[in-house]
Length: 286
Image 1 (spheres, rainbow, N blue to C red):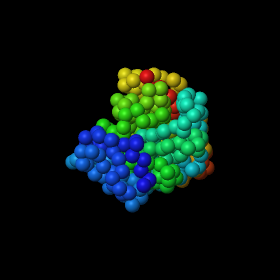
Image 2 (image 1 turned 180 degrees about the vertical axis):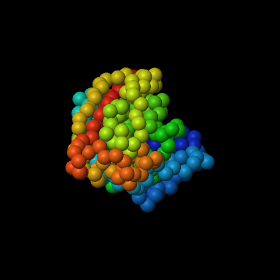
Image 3 (image 1 turned 90 degrees about the horizontal axis):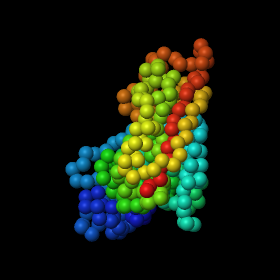
Image 4 (image 1 turned 120 degrees about the vertical axis):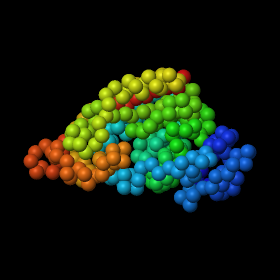
């Protein structure tokens, strides 16, 4: 079985989930959940609306963009922050990627921490499958981050949440005392050139401060805050991938970029200077 049930609890009654057989998880109350042929599991309460999340097109655009290395400094900042502040007693860390997308960032952390036990969760079944392809020993779960999470108490040494919705109280519940939560949020300068063209949604200012206040109230203490602000040179295909990787793609199609005013660095250059500006926030569970 590709599912490590020690991560999981029942989404209906919150009792621990265990392996019933090779393809089924269950709790003592009698609730049962079948594994998919891809080795993932969907854990939603009864009558919950079906989840779709990011589409295959959005995820493929994201994978293409991430493979180009444009966000490599963000991945490196996450790795370095975790390595410097994650206090373990000789054991491999248990890492949960809260809205894993393609699994890029958790994959980098897995490579940094040999033997790491990964839990990959997302509301998109396609995302969970894609993330597990790059991390085949990880546990993959489709769930809704806005609901009580089907994850046991205090099971994560490190939780990460990159460009994704946050559920502060639940993040605190699943992260062990002394464990870390890493959050990446965009500043209002992030991808400003594309946003000013009308191809992407605006970002409100003060996002990092708002997140810090929310998480402090939920039981986290700030550890470090790092602002990454740099210019990346992209071609037109990479700009389209940025638009298509979400969440703006729920509202704007990548093809709309062609109709938007060009933010290029020169007439007909075909290369655009795009500002990448994010806050990498690290918190410790108290």
